[in-house]
Amino acid sequence: MSGLYARHRAVIPDWVSLYYRDPIELTHGEGRHVWDADGNRYLDFFGGILTTMTAHALPEVTKAVAEQAGRIIHSSTLYLNRPMVELAERIAALSGIPDARVFFTTSGTEANDTALLLATAYRRSSQILAMRNSYHGRSFSTVGITGNRSWSPTGLSPLQTLYVHGGVRHRGPYAEFTDERFVDACVADLEDLLGHTRDVAALIAEPIQGVGGFTSPPDGLYAAFRRVLDRHGILWIADEVQTGWGRTGEHFWGWQAHGQAGPPDILTFAKGIGNGMSIGGVVARAEIMNCLDANSISTFGGSPVTMAAGLANLTYLLEHDLQGNARRVGGLLIERLRAAAAGAASVREVRGRGLMIGIELTEPGTDRAAPDTAGAVLEAARAGGLLIGKGGGHNTSALRVAPPLSLTVAEAEEGAAILEQALRSV
View 1 (tube, rainbow, N blue to C red):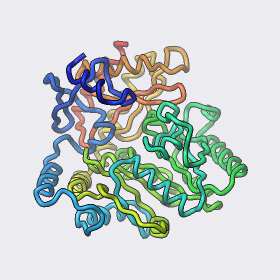
View 2 (view 1 turned 90 degrees about the horizontal axis):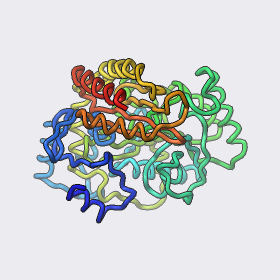
View 3 (view 1 turned 45 degrees about the horizontal axis):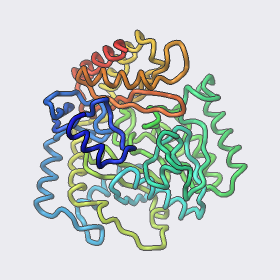
């Protein structure tokens, strides 16, 4: 055990997870690469949990942070804040939500917590619909609605949560259906569920489930849900903490794959917009955002430094068409990984969109999860110079591949080759 690991164990809670049998300390990064304290260089295919969206040490972002820190680091939302207003203007315009208002937080957890507050206050109901296999954060309210037992340590909650089918396409009672029948069955389940409840505040859903292993329904499911929700006055919250900012390649927001019935009522974001800085937020129609009848502020949400970083990062993303790059390079990467997986008996499915790719692992010849295999592949990939993530829920295990959106074709090929070797080694 390293000295730092021993110190970590002595002061950090046991439930703060660490990857690898011998955890590594990352000391610096550049582009799509990071280095550990022993000088080892890794190709980063996880980006600090989908957070380093553009690149490590992106000059445009580090320059904006340094310049803003040299002026003023903190003021709070009690004072006018030019970088916050400028970033809010850009996000409101990009959101697709009419008459949008933006509230900044420090994390995706806090963003989802705020969305739940808005929805329950607006609807005067504490009932929430959530998706099975979902993950929405680590606060008391968000673990209470999370549909993934591995990440929900308590059944206590200020909300009553009911779980809906649809977030996982190829497992569960509707797995063998065609896409059309799958959507119809999930909508029928939703209709039936609403017949057993009192007024519901909102449905919260990740367009692609992140911690759950990058699973997703057929396109259009949430549009079909939306038509049912609208009849009941129920709000739709799109949790875009992992799917936002063009990561899926085909769309800027994940909800746009389900946009036939219009945009969500509330959208939450975080992670990639800050490129490592602590930014989260909520976008909602003015009538929803302004429904609170008590004062509120955010001490650290909308910090001048983080807003400057977000502005620089978003500008770089748009000017360099990183969404298009995610579509092009991500398409190449997923095909390369599918080819690699064809020779690996433990791979059940390679799925995903853009640079958000999941590889589900099972015990060979069965449908049972293989968490030990996932851990072994994680170790083998690291030994080969590649960092990836893992996830899954309800007896599933998956590898999570989500590089920065500036990934090059050469780096995609290199990472796929390392991962192919790691899969075959176990």
